[in-house]
Image (cartoon, rainbow, N blue to C red; front, side):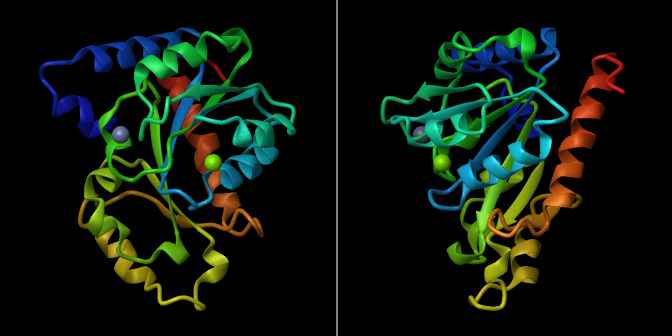
Length: 225
Ligand code: MG
Ligand code: ZN
């Protein structure tokens, strides 16, 4: 979000719609995050464990950018509202797909909306969805060069999660090299190794979600304590 709107003095229709969605979220006091990653990085698994950790504190809803209901069913089993944002096979979500998905959610009773974008590290970065934070998930088996190959994705991130950290030490993955690639793009971004399988690192990530929610509500002038 942060660089994206600044770099775009003339707003196209999709971006305008994204801004309208943000206003809709804010009017309903919903904090929304956009989860982006390449296919197989473990987006849905991270989301499932995140819901387990947060669902007793917040009303959570999930928007799944996909063509099939597979991941929707996985989330639905946790008992939280989930809708498919049908991408029609597109390689990214856009604000029109988001708007259609949001029509199928009861916005009155949501505190946090989690958007699972399409598995792709290139173009999802270029489509503003109205979400407040960009979460980029990389994973150890994918290799340590992702920030160098996909700089615009990592430049727009508010936090980077490095999933499957239980593979660190087993794969040729150099954490310092990975982190250096991100810090060349952004000095102060949090980078958190996590494992959706073992739960390692989730304390930090969940604390980041809690802090971000609280700060966002403060910025909106809402007492969330
Ligand atoms: Mg998924
Ligand atoms: Zn695309």
